[in-house]
Amino acid sequence: MKIILVIMKYDYGIPARGESYEYYNFFCSLKKIGHDVSIFDYMSLMNAHGKENMNKMLLDTAKKENPDLMVFSLYTDQIEPSTVSSLRTITKTLCFFHDDTWRVDFSRYWAGHFDHFTTPDIYGVYKYSKLDMHNALHFPFGANHELYKRLDVEKIYDVSFVGGWHPYRQWLVDKIRKSGINVHTFGSGWKNGIVPHEEMVKIFNQSKINLNLSNSSNWDARYLISSPRGLLSRLRSKKTVEQLKARHFEIAATSSFQLSYYVEGLESYYKIGKEIGIFADADDLVEKVHYYLEDSELRESVANAGYTRTLQEHSFEARFGKVFREIGLI
Image (cartoon, rainbow, N blue to C red; front, side):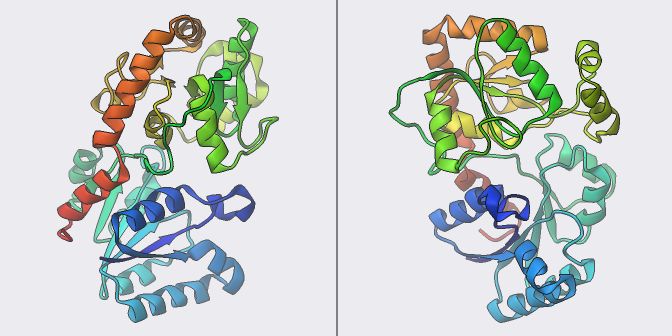
């Protein structure tokens, strides 16, 4: 099948941040499956040629290539609605919404412009149907198991976290450190900075405990009192609920132990306590870190079970196969 991915090739459109989530998981997975897939990097082209010309280039590309499907991952307003309308006369269109639990107005506005759109929300299809939008497809995050994989390396970190800095994440990390356990942090805003993809996968494998920390602002009074910046972030944030994220599946795909925040519906993907570890709040997080560090046999059992479940059900090969059947392309 010929597919054009209308995505940002680089993370947030910035080459210095490395390739994007869509590049690693959509492009690489679809290539591995055997589809004829190409990238239309709308952000780079817009920066080089301007928004109007980029949209014209997108339409010209579709006319020339005549793909079976164009897959979109939008950022803000780079793509014109009129461009999408024109594209729908040429090919099928599918748009991925990764954050529709909190970018509600954005997602609802764009949903009707495409032939089909996705939602990672376990209740998303039902919610959209109540709005008379019947072209929604449930498509949770997953993992490209060719990129996120088990490595034969030594566990050199007791606890690690890979992800962008956030005041709430900093507060949680500080609480663990104060309990006597060091936490090695990597990512934008942390002292160690951003690490390449291959290094990130290695860190997952080298860690006894991989933390999966929410960046949704938290109403814990101790956190808000301790951090004026955190209070300001809480008041400004549009994120009011926790969300299932890609990291849940990526860590599991490396057969590494994960200790995660809880999000509604997580138990539909992994058996809590048997395939993934969770914590309820800051105090529970500290307690669970000590608990799991002391029981290597339990950590290994949970990590292996989560790994098996991921390969069986949560690979992008399985995800795309399901959605292509639902829209009639398989």
